[in-house]
Length: 242
Image (tube, rainbow, N blue to C red; front, top):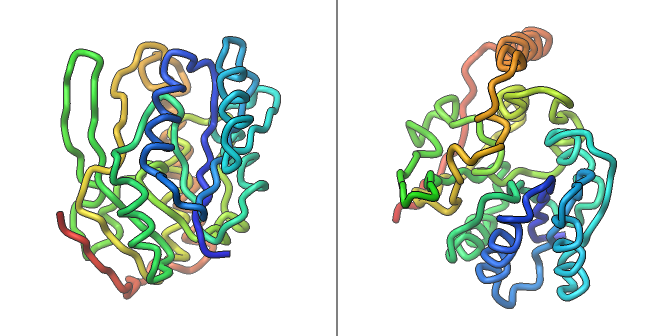
């Protein structure tokens, strides 16, 4: 079906969740071909209750619960509930620009394999900084590896899953997904608002798991060796400027 499914993993984000969901609903407007999947990854605060209330109120929102397994596990779990041929991910402590869905849905009219867009780092102290989603618009290998600044053809996730229990799970996933991309659209606009250095977030907590980055890179290398895919690909790229 033509449309977009949005998978939103949730874990102990009661302070930010309502803002996240409100931004999504405001951007959606009255569009009917968008599905929100709220994956409660075993939250122990009020996040689950907040998510359930939104699901009860809005028919386009589906709430599902699972035992805690981490961000990758929650994303993978949510994928089984998608209805549409394109899917994206949103972290539940972040939020989106009011033009998010108008820009993304316009880009999806050409049925691309991938949509890439810029984002804005934001801080509770008023900090703002725009980050390019891709350094060179016509060179897909310069794309940022973040999962949430892209929209994907849903069938890609039949072959690729996010690695459970690892930091830098996006690095271990995005560069594999690029193997399947034949055409993409780049929207030169910061549609996503990323809360940078939020207290308690995974990447602000020092842990030996910081070394997962090496495992993710090695795994990606083995993926491409196994697929004999080190020759340069020719892709169709379309850029939407502000």
